[in-house]
Image (cartoon, rainbow, N blue to C red; front, side, top):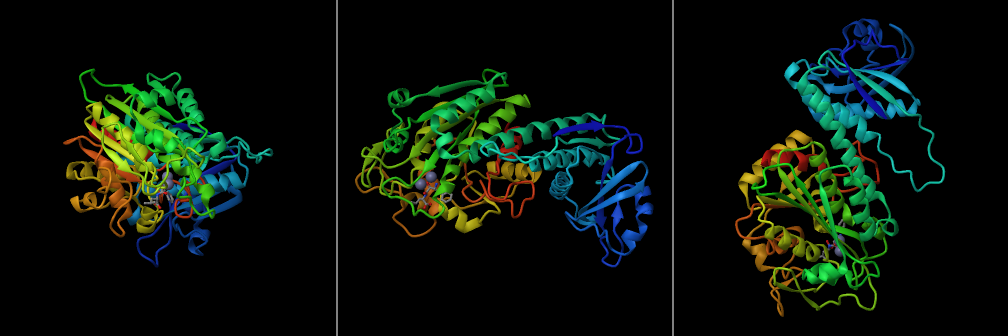
Length: 499
Ligand code: BES
Ligand code: ZN
Ligand code: ZN
């Protein structure tokens, strides 16, 4: 798909199809509004008989429209005019994309002005519309022998603000962000046999070609030398070698502390000796989405040339069962010297993150942000609606809330206390990888991670187990079953807030 931003009016552009938006009136008995005033007159009958209601994501297609030179007009609802948000615009744009795809459109004009009346809000709404279109256009067909025959679509966004600096920047940012989210989604959607730790590292190296980011990949021998006992311990059970991926972006002064992202890169998690049930085990190819989304975030930060230093770390391995696999009761030593008993081999994400967080600490960062599909308990707590995050820092919490409000992604702060830490004490080693208490499985996992973060470093852990895939039932710009790329948009925003 190609999207152009053009200052010409819809009457000056020559295309067969026009997309416009409608809004439901804030008073129930009143009729819907259409963002293009003379079109409102043209469709007054349809508005009057409530064929057009302006309801959120309503799509009404008028063929042989006889409006200006347009053959087709697609009217897309934004919901009540007094409840408009950029997220509603993002979803309306995605609904428009789906309709255009269904009618196999090739070239359309989208009327942007009037979505928001305020010129100052145009930039954030432009960002939302472009994201909605680009994110909705993602598909994962590369493993099918027969591809769907969707023609390449060109969308001309017509706006009187097209030449405004802020609007142009928003357009560019949305394009980069969506490309990076779609890249992360692709990594996540790849099956385990085609997304091994080695392949993940190679795809990362390829993605950063042409950017200023230095990518280093450590193999098993190097990981051993670096004393990453957690990552090695988990990889023991697999024939595939682990990898430790380091992405280094220097957009700030040399003296400036880096912001470090860490992502769980478990390319397949069968649970190890504490094996998972077969039902839905195939979903565990998504256990590297924390890593994939960190890679996408660093890629976006580099492409947007943010003026700051950022490092991304992704420990990557499979969690499988062969004769060398870690057994329940085994003790391993993490990079920072702390020992842990592996009392359940399925609680493996925290073990590989332990080494990565220890390494992140050595980089003397200004903050550490990690993302992981860490616990089933997170799915129980928040479903696929909010991403839960754990931090002791109220300052970081404020920045996260602000970043998520701006990106449109939903997050929720979860508790993390000394009591959760006590539950993770080991019997024969410093720590146990499972809690001695009942419940609070996501908080105790976070408490385990905290043991590997240096004193005084602001740190936040995002458990994306519920939101990393299969969120399409509530977000129309995400696929029904596939990876969501969740938190890439928020992480880039958060990075800006921490720059
Ligand atoms: N990758 C899983 C967590 C997960 C489960 C993510 C479901 C997404 C959906 C993780 O490695 C795991 O298995 N965690 C265990 C920990 C338990 C043994 C303490 C879990 O949550 O059951
Ligand atoms: Zn597991
Ligand atoms: Zn896992």
